[in-house]
Length: 361
Image (cartoon, rainbow, N blue to C red; front, top):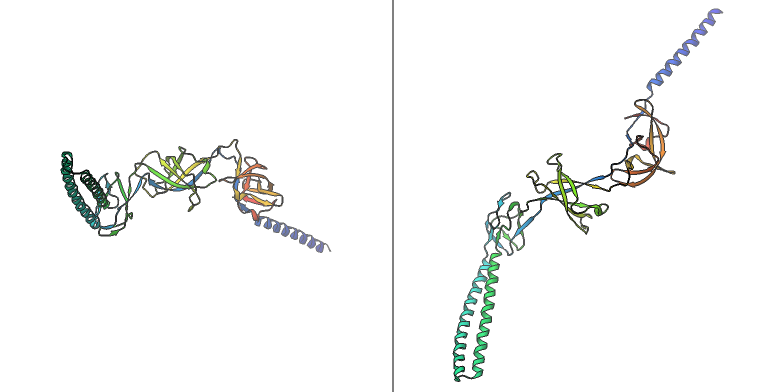
């Protein structure tokens, strides 16, 4: 009998030990969901935003002929440095030269007729003064001479016009600069106004960009900005707003703005992509700003998941309703419900529960 009791006691003790071991194993296997979090803090007094733009010289000239024809001279190449007045290209000018020759022939004929009319007028006037010619003869001679003078003046204007037409077949460098693009070749037939090359003639570099209507009223001329170029690295160049369009560009739905670099450098090439950093909105007082992705919404309003720390790397989720303000580039401004230094979850809000234990990531 005693042996049976002894066996029963041993069995109970063994079961208790197994149960304890099982509990320890369950506790050891317990895992916590990792959560990404951020510490709540105040926004800086100035809100900074960056906009993409493109670098170009402040004076870009499209070179073209004012008449059409075949290019017979073409002294243009990409990257060429040119000087003001340098001959760059010339057309055959066949039609214009023919028209000039015809105008010059007409001028010579008009001059001959004018000289003949003047001799006749002088002779009739002399006879009229002596009483040997009638008044009608004198008036006719005078009118003929005046008509010949008008014809000569008109022929002279035609010659001047045709000379200008011939000059339209030449391209001279209008400013000192560098050829940035070449669009045609020698022996090519071009039309009036067709761009044959592009000349970068400015001494300063500008950045062209588009600004949304939400901030355009805060962009003023002479405002200082910082410019960076991905092709150059992290170097920041000082610049100043020089042009602000009062009308929206219908193609981009933005307002065109230009900023000019304050110091010239050969590192920056026309066409380079640029990032222009503006500082907006001087705040009356510091406000808490949190990421928009950290804010959820339920039937009671907007909320965040606070993290109450439990040890060095663990925490407990607490649902906290807040009152938000304006949405800025950095996120929502918080009017109430949060304090500086608190930690909030910033990812996976749909899978978090009030009171859930998590590990801090």
